[in-house]
Image 1 (cartoon, one colour):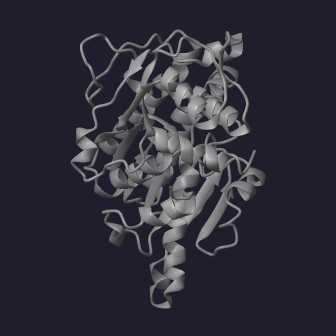
Image 2 (spheres, rainbow, N blue to C red; image 1 turned 90 degrees about the vertical axis):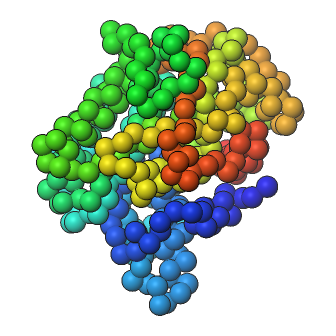
Length: 353
């Protein structure tokens, strides 16, 4: 079972057009998030490999990493902090983006992404996906950015209307916009629409990776998603608390596979297209996840009722599976399936508990 660093190195051997990136500048919002951190680890490993070969020094990728807290970023990105190819900017994307110079690609990964954030910061959840997206799009237009990549979510599909087994990229299900929980999927929909509006108005090229539920070793300790709580409890050897019958059936993706999927869409995706990213071999219920962790980590599972703040942030969707044929046509395929991914994640999480 590979360690996280070995997985990062292995990702650079995958069939991607890396030749598009040497000497380019990538701006990444949400740099300290689960996927943002993983993307930076991959891109920085590319740079370290260049540094090892002096003839390739000019091929390094310049990374402009954006997040709100420099203190947090110094901890999350500590192994890369002093490298000359990484530039960190502390900023709130809900404000005008500071001048950082020309940028070839923008990856917009900043967003509230877990239930407690949805319920305790509903305004911030919406503004990051709408105002934040607009500010980054404005920066892209002003600096003639080649491509804008906005990370979206399985959540935009809403509830299955009973007319599809899987959500294809053209599907749109039901959302009750008059709920606290709707702020996340509705604002993601608006963010996608903004990208299209900027193409129509300014001819800004864009692509949209739509991610399933993502987990992995770069998850934040503050993550309140059910799977994140299960993993942290298992890693600590504590009882796993399941706050439902656990029958919800979702698509999941290991974070390394998700990050490579994002790069696949960025570098190979067709302009103005959305692509589902999901591991179809990792479609399991919450109950199955707890059973695997129970068996592999020797912990017990108990049932409990969520408190009001948690409940307000939970999705009411009970089945959400993605059709991934479109991204598979670009050559992407997941490398780590669910049970192995859980084992890897628990092992890494134990290092920072």
